[in-house]
Amino acid sequence: MSAPCQQPAIPPAASVPPLPPAPAARRPAVDWRIRFAALSLIWGFSFLLIKVGTEGYAPFQVTLGRLLAGTAVLAVAMAVRRERLPRSARTWGHITVAAFFLNALPFSLFSYAELTIPSTLAGICNATSPLWGMALSVVALSEDRPTRRRVAGLGIGFLGVLTVLGAWQGFSGLDLPGTGMALLASFSYAVGWIYVRRTLAGTGSSTLTLTGSQLFVGTLQLAVVTPVFTSAPDSFPVLPTLSVLALGALGTGLAVLLQYGLVQEVGPTTGQMVTYFIPVIATAAGVTLLGEQLTWNTPVGAVIVLAGAALTQSRPSAAARPRPRPRTPDVRPERLSRT
Image 1 (spheres, rainbow, N blue to C red):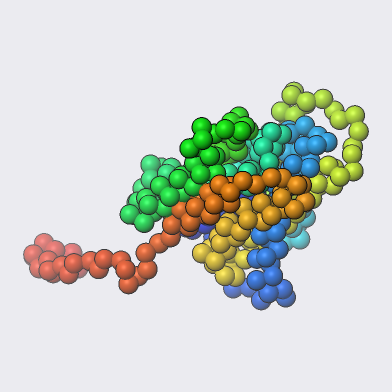
Image 2 (cartoon, rainbow, N blue to C red):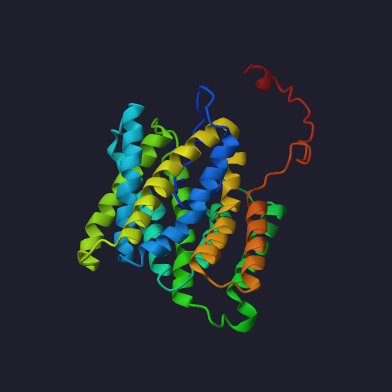
């Protein structure tokens, strides 16, 4: 997905820090609904692009290429806006951890997962991130107290996961390692978002700066790991190469800028709704363009997962919140003397 505000739903394909309140800016020339649709399509097609990329490159190479292209896009945006890099060594330390959990690890896990599972299943597993985030925030974030609605959403969401995986038939025909890696990638996003909220709030750097720095550090991490576990490619097949470049430039670069503007213009509540379109588009793309097969439990389970995720992100309306009980004024002399 710089994090001083309420965390929006975890944006799976980009993983940038939550956005701070921004000053009023000029109204964009392109309507926010068009940009919202473009963002949904870009992130929804990311899983298809990963699948095509792994047909020509090793998973670590796909991730490295993705991060390189994404970092290049954000570097240009930062230069145009004259953004300054963070100066604090402490901030860079936190960015390094965030880059691992929000970029290097989940991007690599999804690439490895899609060697053996369909892109449709990867997209649906990605939708479990808000569920993991809800479960972890109860423990890690004191301000996130569970409500009955959110706990119910958590239970419904994981029931949807079991439906997608076909638990009643013993997970028959399911590639457990690949599915496990996709779910672990989604869990990693949740860990990363909570870490960002706890450590990078109030650093004084903009979201664009932190995100660009995060992608740069993630690129360095993959640049170290990739040569250790892979050898240089013998060729550069056209379609996988274009897929990796598009995955990085669009899904990890341009998409961040689109989300950045959307949340500033329409707020995180509306901006986060893109999360619920991603698995729908990923499923449609996988079935239509890659010929992936669907059984009835996959779309049904996906709907249940999204319903549960929506509940975990919901907040009670002001009218529904219990009103505080009226308090009798404290008129003790010692209290009055402090006023």
